[in-house]
Length: 159
Image (cartoon, rainbow, N blue to C red; front, side, top):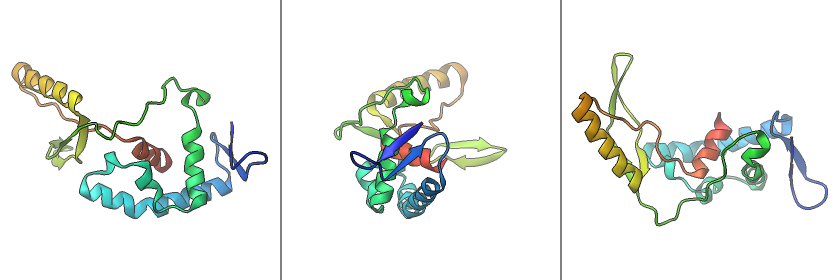
């Protein structure tokens, strides 16, 4: 599948989302290199899952922004996916930050990265946690909570 990048008429270049060509791979590498410090800062502050597109685009030049715009324009259905695009969250949506979750991995205690849940989801999580503790004597952990569309785009590029 080819995805045109550029204005009307002949595209500046095209992207085959099944297999990137050399120029696209180079753009992807530049994107990841340029985003590295931002991602590291957000991860250190524990706010990476809430990153916005505006923040994501700041360290990038036009060609890298166009590359990300082209990826954002791809519809999941065109790639055989069954998911649909969700609207970005309201800037007024309240997220609850979950810190300090400690799990055992391979016999070692490991602290999970901070996770975020929308308030109604967090409230349901708390009810489930209480029920699990009461009925099973076990805790429920959130290892993968909310991720903003910008964070998802970064993860798509990274992986």
